[in-house]
Every structure is written in C-alpha cells, then in structure tokens.
Image (cartoon, rainbow, N blue to C red; front, side):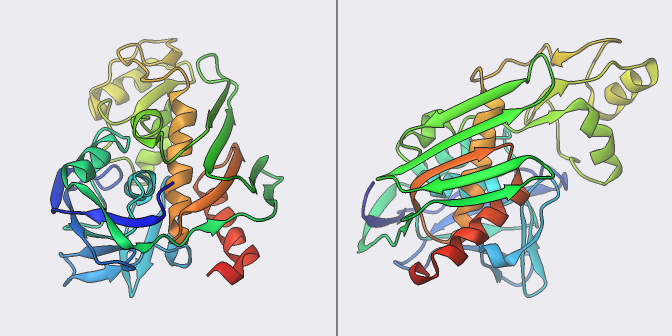
Length: 305
C-alpha cells in the first residue's frame, strides 16, 4: 500500500437519484489539501460541513446516515467505500441534496469519477490504523461476528447466509482489498429480498430503487395482488410462484451479494478516518455491526487516534 496521502487533481461530478429519497442529486468531488480528510458539504444547506465519522452516525436503517450540527447526509456507504477503496485520503464531497445518487447500486461510477478527476499523490504520509492484536465484535442475538487480526496489508473476508436457493451461503475473500477494489469489489450492486420491499416502501424508503440499481432476490411466493403491486409501483413483472434471482437480471459475480456486503463494510469502516492495516473477517454483518465494530476498533486502539 502507498504510504503517501492521495487526492484528485480536478473536480468531477455524478448525477442520479437517491436510493431512499428518490430525489435527483448531484455529487461533486473536489481536491483537498493534505491532512484534510474526507468532508461532505451540503450546498443546499448554506455549505454546511458534515464530517463522515463514526460518532456522527445517527441512523442505520438500510444505510448509514451521518449528522453534524443538525444537517444530515444519508446513505454514505457507497461513496465512502469508493474513496477508501481507491485510497483517497483528502476530498471535499459536495452535495446538492441530503443523499448521494445511487447510480447503478454499486461504487463503480464513483470509482470512474475519481479516476476521471486524476488521482494524485501528496507529500504527507498516510496515517494507518494498524491492527496489532485480535479484536472481536459479537452480536449473539443476530448471529453476527466481526474480527480483525494483524496483517501486513488490508484483507477482507465475508460470509453471508440466507435460507434461499439463489442466496444460501456466500463467501468472499479479497487478499489485497485496496489494490483489488476497483475490479473485485466496486462493481457489486446492492441487493434486496422481495419480502423486504413492501415494508421498506411503507417506511418511505427505496423511493429511487429499481432494477437498474439493485439486484432483486424473489424469496416468497406471490399472489395476484402482490404481482399487481410490483408492476404498478416499480414496473416489475413477476409471475405467481416465481422464486430466485429476478430472471431479467444477471449477476456480475457468482457471489455478487456478499461482495456488495464487503463494499458496505469498507465504506462503514472508512468512518474511522484512517485506512486499516489488518485482516477483517465478517460473518452476517450489516451496517449496525460494521459501525459498532468500527467504534470498538477506535476504543481498542485509542493510542492511534
């Protein structure tokens, strides 16, 4: 891993809709000086700065939301993952709404934008969070475990398990997660179980969700009313009794769902404000487990903060 901090040379933008708000949004990446870190700026809120840090996390409902001085940025994980994966240490991220665009549900477009902005090294050295001893987070009720152990580099291992034909046990291990991020992690899209969609809709979420930005796993038999709901609401044509991966979609990887979980993990751990040097293993973790584990790392390695 490079020991020098990095930023981009030119400003570059992406436009799309927010996954949960459904609001048109433009995100612009700007160069930043050494030791600035990553900062969000809401230009629709008088240029209020919102710092992506674990103590600023206020909501973990189907995404990671941060808040500073009463101003929020929703669904930060894909953007933060792209920054961490491409080893960007200093960046101003300007938003004209409260949620970044979801793009295709992965981090691929953000990675492309950062590369278009020309990634450049700076003179200052990177301040890594070095894992010097094993650290374990457990949530026994949800059967979640996240573990970090010493490793000369950044390695991720992730396992998920669902009782579904198309989504049973999936496993991913990325030896050099920063080096291999662009090709092995960034293209993995978010996924959603069909059984969750109705409830998320009732909660006022996934207003910007569609087959272009999420992988849909059909995990239940549907009656005629449900078939009509999905056709009218999302334009998705299901059939009674359909189960498995929605047939018009093709996975980018055989284990795309668990790779996306890895993408989210990297984005949530980026809220530590330091790239990690170590091996992180996660079992069935989501945003809550990721953020709690990040806080545990901060507490266990106070001398590095």
